[in-house]
Structure formats: C-alpha cells, structure tokens
Amino acid sequence: MVHIELFIFTKVWSIGWRVLLRVALGKELRNRMSMLHPEISWIIQGICPFICSDGVLIVPADSNFMIRDIYKLNVYEYNKIEKDDVVVDVGAHVGIFALKSARRARLVIAVEPYLPNFKLLLANIRINRLENVIPVNVALGSSNGEAELYVATRSGWHTISNSRKSHLQGEIISNKKSKVKLRTLDSLIGKIGIKKVSFIKIDAEGAELDILKGANNILLKNIKMKVAIASYHLPEETKKINDYLQSKGFKHFTFREGILHGARIQ
Image 1 (tube, rainbow, N blue to C red):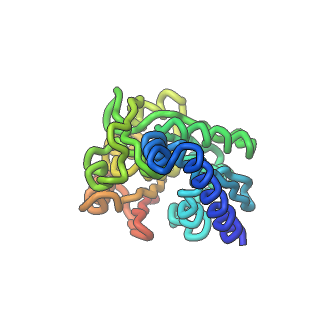
Image 2: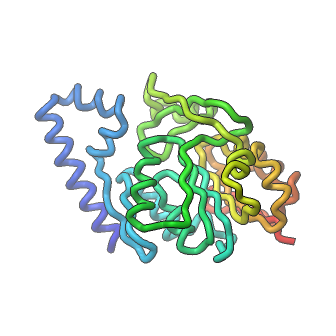
Image 3: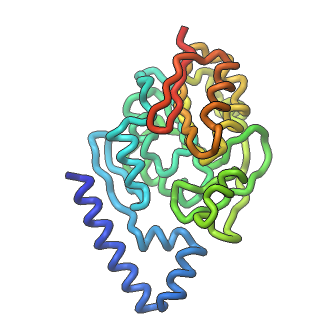
C-alpha cells in the first residue's frame, strides 16, 4: 500500500512541478537546467517519504526501485546481518540500506561520495536518530588521492569509473563532474579506528573491484566476514570479483539479483 501511495504522490508532484517550471522558464530552459543541475530534477521528480518498520526515509523519487530491492527482495542479505556485526555500506546513497542495517547491526559505516546524496543521508540519520551510523563523504578505490565523480541524471548512478561512464553514455551529464576525495577502505577503517568488520556491501557503479583491491588488509584479517557486491555494471565484472574474493579465501558464493554474495565463514 505504501508503494502505491508513494507512486501516486510522486506522479502528481512531478507533473505539478514540470508545469510550474515550464510556465516560469519555458520548456527548453527548464529541460536544460534540469540536465545541468540534478538537484533541480529531484525537485521536479519529487523527494518523497518512505515509511517502514525501521523508520522514515526521505528518498528521491527515482530511487523507488532501491526501496523494493532492499526492503522487498532483500538483495544484499543472503548472508544475514547479526546484532554484533560492523557493517560497511559503500555506495550508501541516501541511507536506505544503512537504515535497515542500523536496526540490526552494532555499527554501520555509510560511505557516499556525491554531496547532495550525502546531505540527504545525514538528514535521514537525524530523522531516525541513528546513533550507530558513521557517515563518510568520500569515494573509495584502490589508492588514496582524488577522483573525478561523473554526475548522472539519476541520483544512484554517479560514478568514478571511466568504463561505467562509457556504458551509461547519455545518462552522464556532459561537462558535469566534481572532484572528490579518494580513499582505500583499509585507510578509512584505520582512520576511524575500527578493528573488526563483519559485513561489506558495495554498490558503486563499476568501481567495486577497485574498492575491494583497496580493502586487502580488511579482507584478509576478518576471518568471518560476509560480503554483498553489486557486480552487474560492467562486462565480466562478476567473474573478476569472484576470482579476486576467492584469492582472499572467500567461499560459499551465491549470485542473486545481480549481487554476488560470499563469506569467509570457516
């Protein structure tokens, strides 16, 4: 019922804003501004509330499918999150999986590089009073430094991967990119001071393998770690990630809904 009401509200909101902006700016200028500034698209498409047993989320309307994936299909949870787990949510977006994890785990580290998404993530943390979530506004990769984040037309498609950028083609906004801090997961976890990581979820628009390469120490030291890696963004991505994780001692692989699940449970 919530999904139906959200869909209807989103459509009404979207039509109203598009008509208003067309009257004020004209169709051509409205469309050009929408492409140059994705935040305007959020206003047009709608930023809507999602209510569930875990709390309330303010979510861009173009992300309704994420709510379905995370809350109905449980795409990241083939391996169950336990109450003592420390979860790293890479590609946290606005906090949909972070909220769900926070209600089940001891600690969640939510990593999101795109600043507008990150601000909404912070708002969702405040709304739900999530004291066990650490938000981090960086991109993760195989080295430390800086990266160019290519901005897409949809709030969940921004990427630092040149290969993914090529696959998205018209979905990447021409000449719209931003510099972001780039960190390895090893260095990030070391800076935070976390000694044990139990569960890593990565959905980073084609940067998944590089992120895993930057988490070498974590993958080797945490004996009972579980992972859920989105591996559908690039050709051969599933095999490459599978092979890399196997080299680090992971077993029990399952591929479900585009997500590769593995564990080092001995």
